[in-house]
Length: 138
Image (cartoon, rainbow, N blue to C red; front, side, top):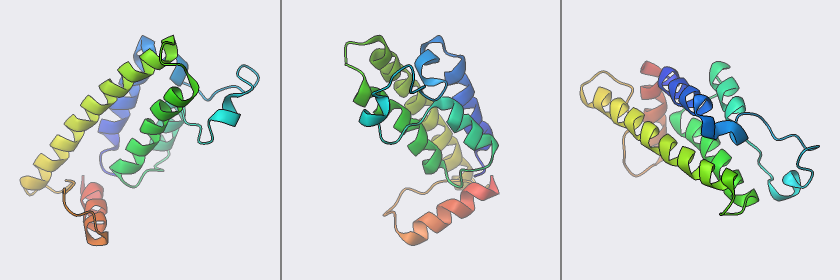
């Protein structure tokens, strides 16, 4: 994935945000023993950062899926009135804004002939192949 630098900047900004306290590390089952009975796909921002640094994401949407899983888990486990839920919603909105800016940048590169863009179209196999090739050119 060619947009690793931009994605790392997004994750770093979220990790530095004081609201990210609940989401920085994997949940300790000793602290929340029922967590894993409610949440079947655990994810946290520290794991996302490790995966980015380890080159485990081939496409931007894989990165996006993992970060969105953090917020899905937050909403699944926590009550809407809880501090964690509200902070998760704030961070999710921040993530969506910043990811939107990265997508716009990628599309601008593609439109300018520089490669690295993500086409918005029917989503077929050829579109996915083109997206992967473009992301790798960045």
